[in-house]
Image 1 (tube, rainbow, N blue to C red):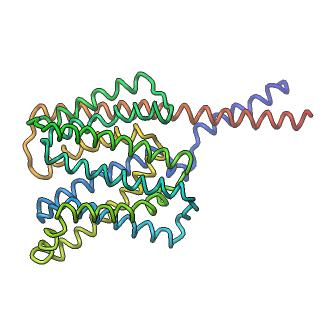
Image 2: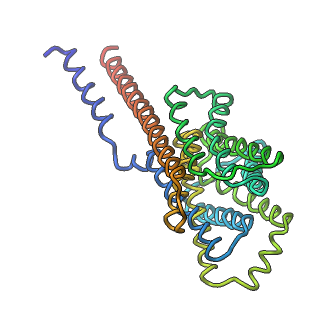
Image 3: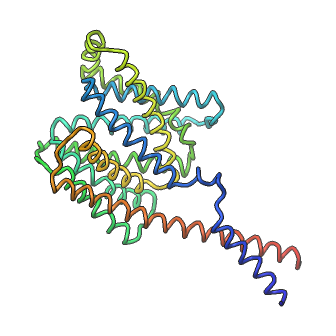
Length: 350
């Protein structure tokens, strides 16, 4: 065997090994694992929150959101004390960005809640299903991201599936229409900004981001609850209807929200803004499907078609993204090994 062949064979075997063998520790770095965790915590929190409203009559969305942000602040601070992450030193400009991000986070919730009073739920869900479309435009404009044609096609069954799954009475006022569109755009902006903050420029750890954002969002949420008069109703509810089971259920709900935020930020960092909005749509339809089963609701043929369409579109999109990431990993592994071999050859033959 020639010397050239003897050099090529080890190189070839190393490339095969680097592509096929994945260390166990890399599993936690897998975007797929974090997306599965995102679905689990998101679905669990959504269904648990609905159960709170139905079985305990706790119908105070701002207070519940405030509880979520408070648990986020406490949980991230405890993780900081345990040394799980170390906050980055930020300058005045970076702190301003964090403040603006927290306002965007709270404003997104506020616009969504207000618009729900001016439009029907089916119309609200259909418009929110367009979030991936707005995310694509924002990613192309601000992140300079390009998408293959297959990605655009795979979004069609997802968007139409949500429309069918939430099919019902479509009614809206002019202001409701405007606020619903604005809320959808803000949701896309929040997702894109979250990805940008964690992957370029600041490159903040997901727990660090939650650590900085949660206290600001908590204060802003309390302000909204006070201005809307919700805190007065909560005070009356606590005096007349608060029980230990409800208190424990609220605590569990807050803990779920904390872990969902951690998983959501991490998944956003490891995937992309578009992937997170698509995952949000699929989660939305899955929550509808589970709600039909858990709360004994009637499901129509149109709703069933919508659920199936969305799930098929989600699987299709996930397959395309997985293949793209797998090819990217293989290409990077091959390039790294070739560079190492070139360095060895240069060292042996100066």
